[in-house]
Image (tube, rainbow, N blue to C red; front, side, top):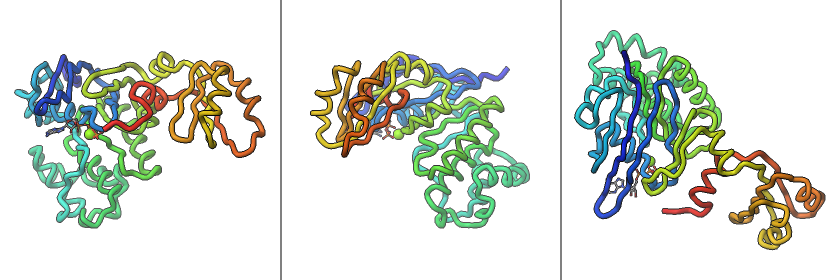
Length: 304
Ligand SMILES: Nc1ncnc2c1ncn2[C@@H]1O[C@H](COP(=O)(O)OP(=O)(O)OP(=O)(O)O)[C@@H](O)[C@H]1O
Ligand SMILES: [Mg+2]
């Protein structure tokens, strides 16, 4: 019986005197897409690298496909496809050669890998680039190739570190579509992303981490309901502080970020009535989303 699950139990990692992963626990079930979200430097890549046995955890227990990590990493990785945060393709080889070489790492026969290549090129919409050198591809094409390459061993589990960063909107939709079809085929996916829309569309469940600690976990819908639970009116215009003073009596909560005032409202009418037709202001009334949750929990200011 296959065990396509991922388990993190009270995992710690320190670099020098800085704790970058702090008592992190989460569980990814077979067949689900699980998101690991967090601001820059939160510890997402370190977490994935520990899962792959590339970085030694300071303490805690990790398992991947039923193998204890790091001791069983070599066995687990046979069943895993990986997209690292930064592409590590060979720039001097062609697109096709990069796929063939990668197949060899998994001990696949040349004929078996060759037979996979057309399907993978189609997956990445790189059919016309099969013989182009990777050094001649655009950044987005390279990203698509890295994703296609991660499927060469027909993995049960995919570990994707920012799979769609650097992709244009069309390519991002293509990848979402591809990832959904992989989920429909029963694959398990663990991904990191800075695109809240991506997490909202793809992830069955997710956790948000900050400074290595888990600060929230649930389905996107549960998190939006529990952390926000109402609509949002965004108001763009000069002097957001004066606007806040005027509108806050009609909102459950307000926030300012740059020139934008965010009003969290159960009843939008009183604010609509005040803003309608006002010169020099634009506003947008929308349901709350995962980005609101993320920014509420991690702050609207940059961290680093
Ligand atoms: N090899 C290393 N040596 C020392 N510190 C490191 C090392 N690798 C990562 N760090 C630190 O660990 C923290 C977490 O880094 P990590 O790359 O895991 O973050 P991340 O969540 O993936 O961020 P991003 O969204 O920017 O990719 C950061 O403070 C980073 O500077
Ligand atoms: Mg990272």
